[in-house]
Length: 329
Image (tube, rainbow, N blue to C red; front, side, top):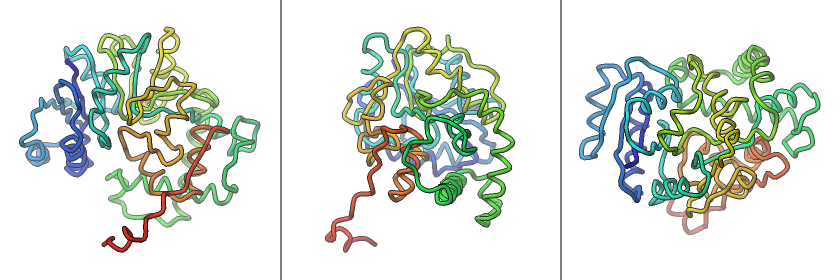
């Protein structure tokens, strides 16, 4: 039996859970499972409303004793569940096709597979920092927008992602100049960690927004103390990431596309699942796939280059047919 562990982060309110459940109803998982809802950072006043969203949905719910980073929440769930396989979905996840769980589960049955997920990336914090400093790095010969436009695009992307962070959004919109300055201060503060704790491009890593593993495999992975967002980022794509730990054991990490095809890490760009083409292979969406979908060709060029280097193949959004455009509200 598979446990589908969906993380509900309290500050997001009921909207994020409602979005996931809408997709869960529209796109049946396709195999036997137990939906496990993990309340993280949920206060007493929110519980009734969140439980109301779950009315009519068969599930088991747990409340974490205190708010923790998402990967720490997954580790807690793995220790408290006895299912053979665990599929972890973060708060922003949305299923885009039926049988999504069956496809992830089937990928795990392939020979020598340790982890399978809906998206992966080769992006490197270390190489991005070196590129920003004008120092030699694998990104320096990759096609990206001019530096001034690149800065504007990154600020735009950061502002868009912050809209999904209630604690930041509550402070109200920032002036673009203020946002640029704060971004530079933050980048300077984190620069040593980005250089020391992350590998250079290509930094192969399965993204942890939606992935599946044998419970025995997942609990055997080293999960250090996670007190900051940076700690979780290091565990996702750093030098001791889950992916690198799996590869060190001689096991494979697969990306699973919408049609069920699987891709080993050297072939991930061809899956067209994350920041590539029009993401037409994407099985499970999240807030970071959304920043690509909502952008024009310049934004997509920047993101695709960071994820895939010289193998980037960004495509502009598909044009809306005139007949369909006439029906838009």
